[in-house]
Image 1 (cartoon, rainbow, N blue to C red):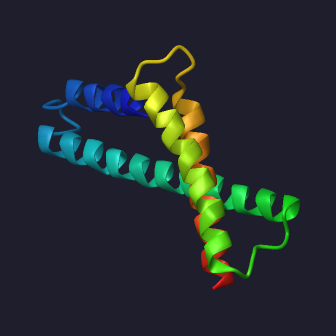
Image 2: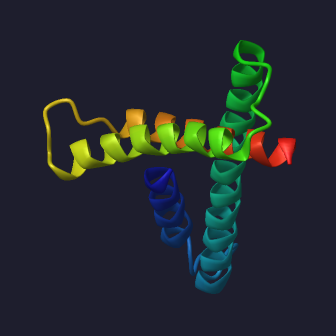
Length: 118
């Protein structure tokens, strides 16, 4: 995502001061593009979380009525995400940003499932 933004701003600025675009307009266009890309990335993550809620609900349709048990499920997912973060910070061989992202999505999905039940 950052590389795309960098290429876009370079392209826009390389045409600045030509007849059709000013530096101010090029910077404004690049800023708008950046803001758009951030929103797209945020919605992309929300979509992944909602897909995980649906997948988990199909696999385990009955969320516990007991709040402590529900929190234990959230805690388990949080623990798995924490384990992946530790691997990254300790520079372990099997560190993986995609695994951390996956576990954070699972954690967010379990939080949403509990919120829906309340």
